[in-house]
Image (cartoon, rainbow, N blue to C red; front, side, top):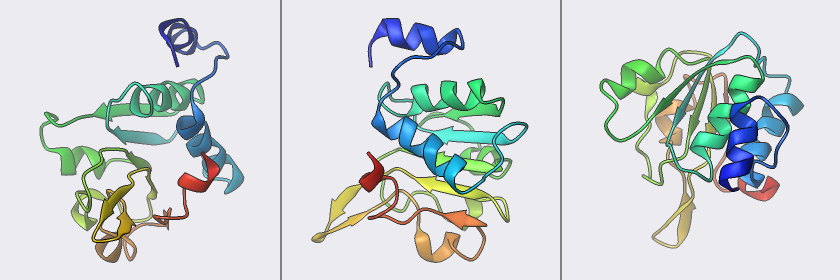
Length: 144
């Protein structure tokens, strides 16, 4: 992903966006998750995942909010999302208090901890609230 491709995406034109953002979009489409007209929140503003994914979602007609470590009231912003994508690298940082009931949650995080790979989402608390939640490991990772 380079500045020219970033610019193309920002203009709404086709451009390579990286495996992880494209994988997230493919997951949404494959599972018939409505994107157009949805409110999407992307937690993480990296050049590899967060920013390109926010542009891809915008280009698919979602209303997108991109959050980061200094976002005020992050749980409140996340609770507005029909589609919540987290790519922070902070294991278990997103719990049920961040999730709108029935929301689609894509956990991009993969952090080794005590010999296993864990995501950004506290699966035990989020699973009963979310309508759909990608597993870690085995969700976005194998697609990318």
